[in-house]
Structure formats: structure tokens, C-alpha cells
View 1 (cartoon, rainbow, N blue to C red):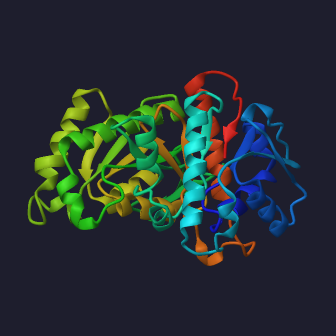
View 2: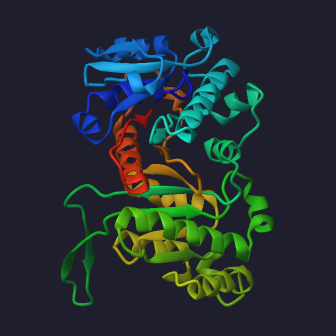
Length: 354
């Protein structure tokens, strides 16, 4: 359900009215039923919220929202559109329950509505975000965040050749951006960047994009410094850290290119030269991909034994509970979770967790 004070409940109810959601999976909500009822009322949805004891009881449809109750009634007193420990606790408990169900095989995947890091910490759970929390729950050390963007049907790139002739090029079937470092101060990136970490992220990017594309992906690796360091004038991380990682990845039979300046690399990736990009830090990858498709971008956690996706946006306290939330990101997150579940389990989807 995410933070009850944010836009998560609204995006869930908004996505529920989308017929393709029910064609790709059988969804069930984990969270406080009354919070979801409030969102139903706010949006004027005809859907009815039904409490169920387990996902197996879920008989979801456009008009029925099954909800496995989770969390205490303290969540009902959490203020709307504000950081509060009660909202952080409710979001935390929903994530824990969702992960437990996924690890036990009761659901094939989980989609997390956004939580607020400050609210999470106020509740006593000092994690930088979903990614690190889920990695600990699943007992994994090799993990990463990937933003994934699947372009709408017919989307294409416009380019111009040397003679001024315009060319329309159909874009790649999907673009993933994996981050070597994630939720940390920019000053800490340099100390946390290593050849081993870059190779590990290249492997994770290759694994998940193979599953999504059905073929080996082409991976572009970002430089850290402007102009890829300009042969050492603006820093030597490209030659001492990133280039050795690319060579090791190639020796492991990965199709990797770089290090390339991030500004031009993202243009090439947009136009179809790469299926995935490995970014050195959070904003290097996030800003470019969100400019390409903010409400279609999906966060995928790599390296987990379970499927987890989420919309790329946050709790958006400034517009929460005003009926203004955009549900496109939630719809895309559900679709990607369903697709990953199909290729992961090679079996019929039982339910995809919201």
C-alpha cells in the first residue's frame, strides 16, 4: 500500500480501473482496508474493497479490490500529505508482509507503492529505501536498483543526417538503467565506486534484460566525470576503475561498451544503440530516464529471489489525497512485474501483489 499519507492508495485504486491490469495478473492489495476505502471514495470509484485472509482468496475484478489486512489502526490517524512515523510504520509493515508472501510463493511478485524515507526512519526503520530493506529481508548482498522504461507502441526517435534529412527510427523494446551506487550523498560516491561493483551491476543488468528481451542485451557504461575524464584532465576514475570493469565484463561474455560520457550515452540509448545503461550514481541515471518517461518508468530491484517493482515516483505529499495522482506509473509497474513473473516462473501467474 505504501505510505497512507502519500499518493500510493490513490494510484492503486486508479490502476484498478484499468482493464489491462486484470488481463496480465490477479492483483491483491496488502495494507489497511480502510485506507483503500478512503481512496475509493475520494476517486468516486465504483469498486468495493473486500477483506481476505490470504491472496489465495482473492477474486479480483475491476469492481472488487481484495485486501489482505496489514498494520494497526494507528495508520488511520496518520496525517495526509506529511511525514509521520505512523505512515512510515504502515508502509514498512506492508512491505514486510508482501515480501514474506512472495518468499513463501503465495504471490508471484510484489509492486510497492511509494514510501517516504524520513517517515520510515521516524518509525525506527533506518533503511535508505525499499531496495536495501528488501535485500536484507531476502538475505542478498549482490543487488541493484534498475529503472526500466518500455516505450508505448509506435514510439520512435527522430534524427537528422548530415544532409539535413530527417529519419524516423523505431526505438528499442525497452531500456533499463542500473545504478552502481544508490542512496548516498554525492560526496560518498567516489569512495563506494569500485571495479568489482561495476562488474556486478553489469551482470545484474545482463540477467534481467535477457529475461525481458529474450536475447543478450547491449549494455552501455557511463563515465563518472564530464567528457569521460578527458584523458585524465577531469579525473582518472574512467581509466583506473571503470575501464578495467568493462574489460572484465567483456571477458565474461557480456556485450558491454564504455566508459562513455553520460550525456551522449543516454541519447544513444534512447535511440536504440543500447538496451541497458549502467550509471555510476543515482541522479546520473534517474534524471535522464525520467525525462524520457516519468509516468512510465518502473523501478525493478535486481538480485532478489522474488520479483519486485514500483512506480518511479515518490509519495508526492504536495498533491496527495487531492484526486490528482497519476496512476500510469503504477499500471506500468504492475505490467512489468507480471512480465518478470512469467519469465521467472514459467507458469501461470497466481497473483501479482500490490
